[in-house]
Amino acid sequence: MADGGKRKDAPGGGEQQNKKKKTGNAGKWKTTHQQSKMVIMRDSLPQPGDTGIWVTCARHQELKAGREVIELFNEYAEKMYGIKIEEPKAATDEEDEQDDIDASIQKEIAAMNTKKAPGDGGDENQIFTLMKMNVDCLLFVKTKAPIEPVEFVRRICLDAKEISRLDQMKCRYVNRFTPAPLMGKATEAGIVEVAREALEPFFDLSGKRDTAADTATEAGESSVGKSEVGKAEAEAEAEANTDAPAPAAPTGDEVQPKDYKPLTYALRPTIRNHSKLKRDFLINEIAGLINSDLHKVNLTSPDKVVLIDLYQAVCSMSVVDKDWDDLKKYNLFEIYKQAVKNNSSGSGPGAVPETGAE
Image (cartoon, rainbow, N blue to C red; front, side, top):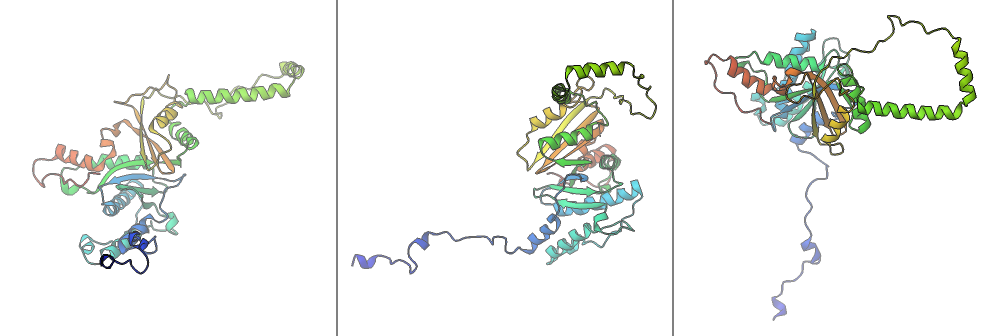
């Protein structure tokens, strides 16, 4: 009777009772919502050599922010460069609320990335390409010539300071812009390469790091030279050069050393989804290129701000003007809030809605 009260094992054996049921679909199929996200993410990672603008936005509002930023950029492409971009029909907010919301979003995202200026031959020539990164609140807009990201972003932010009413806001979900006129690999060598190209127009790059590299190179060349050329050959060459004519005076066509102004600067690194290179390394490596006798660090009121952005395997860098801090670090939503507060006459719509928080 005692044995009769025991529960019998299942037909397949007792081990299967303890096994957890596997969940997930191993990527075999995706919901309509997942597919709509994949449209914008497919083949949409920035690459070394690209130019563009990083865009942060309100959390979980990436699609709406993408729609806003493309419309805004199209407007300023026409205003600043005379580029008229045809606008395809986009889904409205009312359509988004219907049952086929995912299908509408999918079509809208595809439409945003197929806008072309008249006369363009294909998608590869489109001025703006929207990319959604695989991290919340972050977008990247790839740009093509003649768009100059630093000038382009600053103009947008300066104009945003002029509004006085909330209904003049052009974007509700877009937060910060970061221009990326230069992009390279997020490696030690890639950082130095991008930094040289970004900093050279503004700073004398004869800092300690640069001087040490040149000294090591010269030392190596000198040792090789001594081993190949004997002392007697060197003396003979010196005697031959004694009778040689003096070098010609430099002409106006020759490149002269650039006369750099003693600018102060600050470095502002941002690292996302990247763990190999650390913040301290970036600061020391880039600051080491700059001549510290001519250019001093000023973290409170610099003449130039160097923006460094690392995302996964790419690094972008730009040099912006001293009004970067006054323009709320190019945070469009914060500029709008401050502008309404400063310019409002006390009438009109109420407080700025809190939709811009990351």
